[in-house]
Length: 547
Image (cartoon, rainbow, N blue to C red; front, top):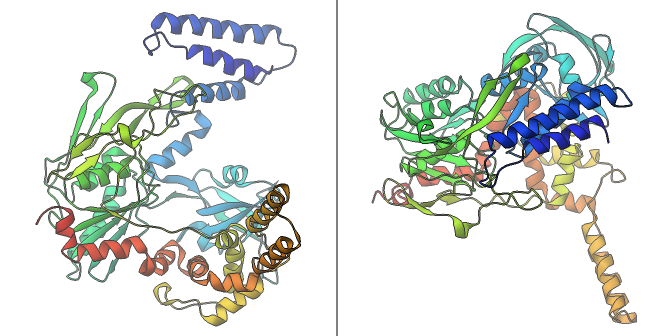
């Protein structure tokens, strides 16, 4: 057994609980003594050398995994990750990376970043960072080399596809960068649209800036706040943003820890910017934590409607605690309850199955609560939207086009041969572009998921075992197999609309970054269009029981 494995077992002992389900002081003391003795014995008598830092990190992570996935330990060399989560800031060149073919590629430079100004492009393969050969390293290792203190220099050697001089070296200065939590906002018809991707300390300022623009624009008659894919962040930022829409002094969330003294009530502290304007919040399965606090308060207070699909269901609150030797523990300290009094946590980590897994709370065990106007809502399992959107299913063909980077590579080639394009909102995939895209796909290298063929094979085997495979049945199977054989050209035409969404967004992002991608996608966005229809009709008041 390795040193790390023994540490894992010892840490597990330290997690032992008393009969009441809460660690007793005596049990903790006894197990920590055992753990300390094991470490000393290994240190003094183990046959090989040990790697204590790595082993202890693995042991700590294993121990914390018995609690919940949100309680995490950050040693000093990983605290930049924690800082980025709360502030969005880091020192680096400003580029998104992707792993591909055992190498690291640029998936996109950030707009206005040192990488963008230096001419780094999507599709560039990173060969060397300063003197380090990274041609066969993945993004986790390359990221550590690219990041660093602001105002320090870094040299990057790249391989660029579809270029005569494919190898180039750029030298640039790292900067203190901040990923915006509002990457895109715009007026679409009569709707002020805000995309909010995280809750960091500057999120309220970014949302406020967008709202101030809407306030000065006479076209804006309603607002859509897009929280899809927003995994949360700072609770306080969610409370501040809610204050833009609800009366000053409104309770929007309360947190409860292990004892009554730890309960905290959060109320809005400023006068709202838009106290009455019709409001819709877009959510999906990626909306969690602080995003659910904001959306849940909007729903419970009947301040607006939720549109989309059920949210993630994270009702737990974390806080950071400094540890010796500059480590930090992010620990779950409370559960949060939105204005109706409900907790929307979907998984109960305090009651695990025998195998250690955690199950979702079944609908039969959830409870009814009421919104401000008396609408029925339920706890557990996330937030149910007022208007449900069927996102549809992505076909296997479309999935493979995206997964295997056919659309990504075509966009890279397109940008290499087209210096400019029309504004993102006006760009369309013409027949000429789509035909060229189809020609770029090598049928011999295109990876189909052979579900149809496997299904036919299994059905033949079953028919044979059951004694149905005579000449007539065999001929019928052969005929059906021909009808169900993949035809790449036909399949690409059949799924053109879905493929165009991905292909078009990839192309416009080469010229207009993430903002361009949003401008291209939003006109056909199901949830946004459904929300606008509700906001601009009597459906809004009917949903909120105002009439």
